[in-house]
Length: 297
Image 1: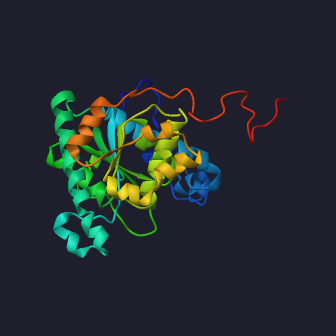
Image 2: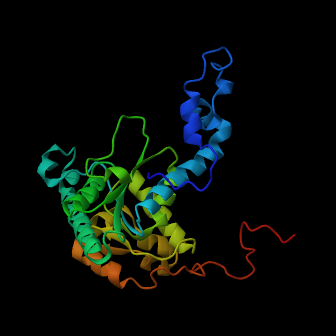
Image 3: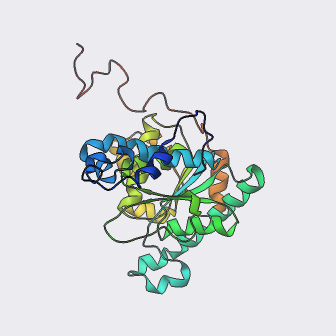
């Protein structure tokens, strides 16, 4: 991140952090309590500092993306286990091998989006954003790189050793501790959310996004499910509507697409894009004292 212009004549924290490394070695200066609070990792990782860590993890990527002039993103979610066509023989199941076609479509789509972004906005709008890992995420970052553009990787610390895929733009590679803050960054700039076949993580992100749009907590954006056959086999959307647990209108919050071209057309023609729902179809909008609502005071 670039150095901000100083607006005051006082010594700044960087100077004092450097000076504090060279203080005389005494029993007092060796004490953990003597460390500068903002430079003390043991202090910052205490349980009581969790609210501060939430704020820092929200603020650091926000500042970096603002400084990089990233105005909007196109988010790609999808399975980390899906291999590129050149490696599909390594897939653990026949179904995973067949899904290598989705890796290729994610790469093509990201490349098309990035080419258009660079031509029309200098690469500031519709910047590809993924979870930064392998599989579909790698395909998205790879397509952007092949177009000569930037892309974002929002990685998260996992128990097994990992690193961002090699196609993430280095200065737009981030690492998170908190899943909740990472999810916020996925959606804060999203102009479209593209969901490729995947597992638990992909389902989690899909339903989080749909819930936010359904309830009016987030403006409507294109939610594009690549590969109708996969999605109709793993989720019975119509059964939810027939049971009344969602409204039939909720089925219009997403759309199936098969190709990069279909996805781009859907992005450009999405109805009510950016608008927030004012009601949740099918929900009681009367007194607000339905089941589970507390009585008036």
